[in-house]
Length: 121
Image (tube, rainbow, N blue to C red; front, side):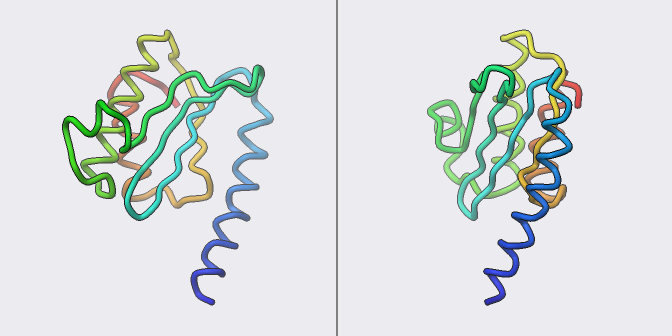
């Protein structure tokens, strides 16, 4: 029961965040999802409904550098990879959609790594 309650609370936070982010459609959004073993990130343009850039701990570029995808180092590497791809596509500003997860740990490490690559939130 405790897990179900935790998931219900995360989904309610997700709704609240998504309403705020989708009101401002002048920038794409960086959406983050984390599981116990992996972390996923993608930059989505809500105007066109298309994914511009995506990266995760399952991609080929990540697997060459690290084995485990469920720790802080992995999250910062995924953030660096998506930051480089976004900069190459000319994306300079995004909104961070943390998908209902708390802004600590792996989510924060990913966001900080994206910021280091020159992407503004």
